[in-house]
Image 1 (spheres, rainbow, N blue to C red):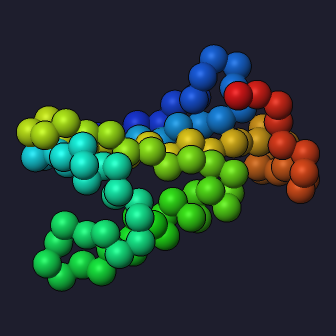
Image 2 (cartoon, rainbow, N blue to C red):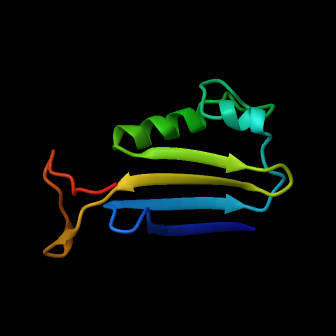
Amino acid sequence: MVRLACRQAAQGAAKVAISVEDSGPGVDQEEIARIFDPFVTTKASGIGLGLAICRMIVEQHGGHLLASSERDQGARFEVVLRFCQPEQGQLYCPRGQWPQGQ
């Protein structure tokens, strides 16, 4: 099973948290510590750049990409990004004028 959730990151914060979690075999703690490093993979056919690139993109947008897992209890990935309030039906946030909040 895969679960997708979207919520406000913290009460009063101008951030949104998007999480994806599964009920699969999970990831060992040693692997979690290196999971975002370039060229680290657990797959025979992978080159280990996918999560490194994802983290770089999220961080370039001022966010964070986090991973947590316990063996045999699935894995969870969470993207935390700043958000802007809708203005006249569109999301608009002038460069450098991000909302305040944690």
